[in-house]
Amino acid sequence: MNKRALLVVDMSHDFVADDGGLTVGKSAQEIVSDIIKTANTFLENEDIVAVCMDAHTEDDPHFELWPKHNVIGTKGQQLYGELGTWYDTYKEHENLFYIPKPEYDAFFQTDLEEKLVAANVRDVFVVGVCTDICNFLTVYGAYARGFKTFAIEDQMATFTGNQEMFLKQMEAIFKTTIVNTSDVVYKL
Image 1 (spheres, rainbow, N blue to C red):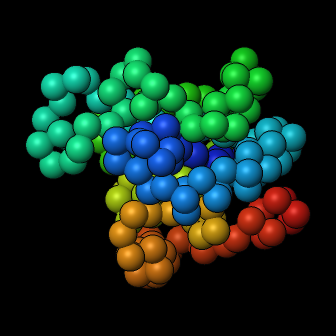
Image 2: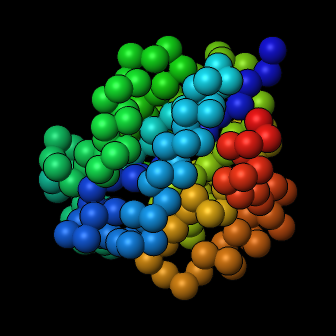
């Protein structure tokens, strides 16, 4: 039987909290409860949830481009607020994966593809931050590996003004289906 996967991208303290190193801030904080509802729906349906998290070393060359964020083992890399609590509750669930990622695309140099293929996943839903950076490139990573992609638009946020443009780009370039929380939580 085919399964679906929910990829929760970069919902860390550094990307979400007011004092985070590269924060999206309030718009990211506002999507936390819907991400939790959606993750619960996926697990209840025996689908997959993968928490995909930037994982940088202290001297990562990435910090030549961006402020320091998501350094391995720091508070900044921990899941933000209630998402952290949710993860601690379900972390032993067989359909919940934690995927540390070195780059924007959650498939690049990770075992995410292998885990999704082994679970017979065909459809990949993406939520989290940032819509125009890691979400966009993770959608591309899924598309390039043959998965059908979905972006849950009201569970994405960014610190730029490019949200709508990049959702349209996902739809046009990667044939991503743009959905919202009610489509996923109440119709799966």
